[in-house]
Image 1: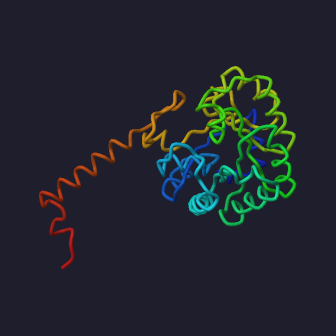
Image 2: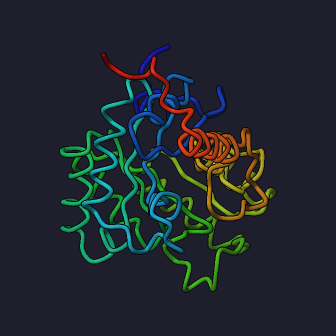
Length: 261
């Protein structure tokens, strides 16, 4: 399989469904890449699924660069995208360019993702001007959780269509649609020339993304309606840890064959 680049990904629209997953560390990134996933997003969701925070808002640029660098070391084929955290791009264009550049320069990513529609189209244009590829993200944007009053489906057809057109015009190479009704996601997908990547947006997007920990049954949070868990690794891990504890307590571990002479 060929390495996934921005032009290759963009060319998949209408030809081949795009698969995407999050990853935050070396072993999981290796497994995701080996499975042939097209996009590995180092999401600011790391704050929730790895650090146990209630929102993504506390995640810092240094944390994101650290996790992106680890993932980039593991990935050989997929397109690595770094997720710009809260306040890394909202303050100024200068901050946006510097912080996005860190994902490529220090983190080894090939692109960045940022949340927002028309309100951030100027930021997207500034990044693409300097050859920093951008994946846009509209609909339910987790960094706007307080304004939205929670993680709620977004149904404003006129606004979302305008947002999609705006980020496309600004130069985004792909567009995440999160928490958008199925029919509206289909309409948006048909209205733009760039691939749409859905999460909680139904089957008509050009691709799909999930949080890896949700897919594997490792998340500490209740699964949203749109998540399909493909494994229950949490139960397997808990059982293994419990059996280890029992073997230590009983003296069954380690055996004489598990030591040096």
